[in-house]
Length: 168
Image (cartoon, rainbow, N blue to C red; front, side, top):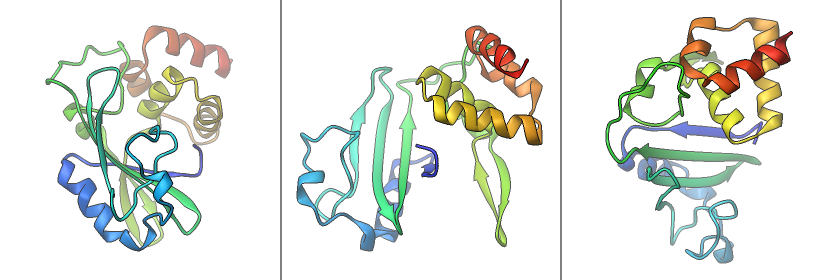
């Protein structure tokens, strides 16, 4: 959701490290950490700080979700079943080993944070029909500009056409 913090890491053990760093924020509500709880409702707890699962695309996830000072905070390592060569313009999901070459750094207070570019996040959010996020990203594009080459690389044809319609 807009306003949350999503951290993507390259190794499953890094999700466990993040859970350890923020262990004081693990939920005390044991009903929210049960393994039969849907992923949308699940939160990390002392007994289950991380969860692993395989999604509809056969990506293997190691995942943690906490609330830190009122902000939902998610950490994930998403590993595709195999290394798949990306075909530019076919739709770039923000997972897999090839995402790391596109990471950019943005300033925050006195540090630089590595993030997935909004151009790539837009593809994911369009495919998930997350309208609030889509329009927030496009609003940023309209005020701050964007990398047209990366949009062409990251968005599939349907999403490129939709972006063009929204921008005109």
